[in-house]
Image (cartoon, rainbow, N blue to C red; front, side, top):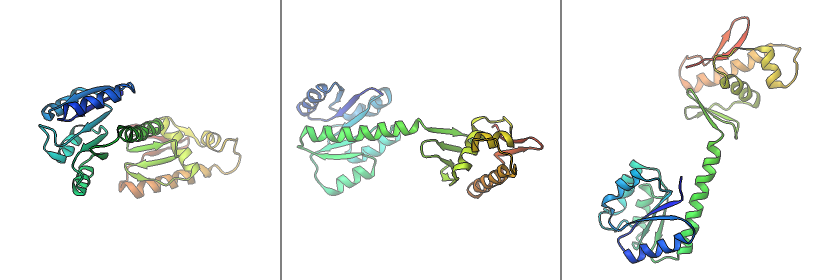
Length: 229
C-alpha cells in the first residue's frame, strides 16, 4: 500500500496547508474540496488514509462514515469544527478511527496518524503467521487454532499434531512418524499416545463445529491424515 493520503475538505486554504505539511514527510497527497466524487476516488485509488471533514460540500455529515465502510476499510480520521460530543460518538460508531476538532496542531494530527499506521503494520506482521486451511485458521505465532471463529484450545502437543497433519492434506503419517516429528525422538513406548491426542483433537473440533464431519481421518493399519477438500 502506498503512503498516500486523501484529504476531503471544503476549505481550500486549509487543505493546501495540510498538503504542504504532509509532503514534507514524503506523503503523496490527493485533495477533494467537494465530496461528490469520494466513492469513485476510494474505489479507483489505493490510499493509506482518509482525512475527512463531514461538513464539506457533497458530504452529508458523519453518516458518510457508514457509506465509506461499505466500500473500504481504509483508516479514517474525521477533522471537523463540530465539537459536539454526540457528533464524535456517532462518527466513531459509524466507523471512523479517530476524530480531531479544528483548529488543531498538525503535529497532533501526525502523531495520531502514526499511531494508526503502527497498528496497521503490527496487524500485517501478525497476518504473516496466519494460515487458512479449510474451516480452520492457524495462528503459528500464538500457537492457536480456530474453527471458524472458535478457539479449539489445543494443548501444545495437540497443536503440533494438528499443524503437521493439516500442512500436508492427504498425506498419511504413521504413528511412528508423528511421534518422532512431535515428541522429537524415537518413541519405543505405547503408540497409542498418538491415538489419544487425535481423539482429543477430534472431540474439541466436534464440540465447536456442531458437525460430524471428520477432518482428521484414519488409514487403518497405517496412521492418520488430514482430509483434502
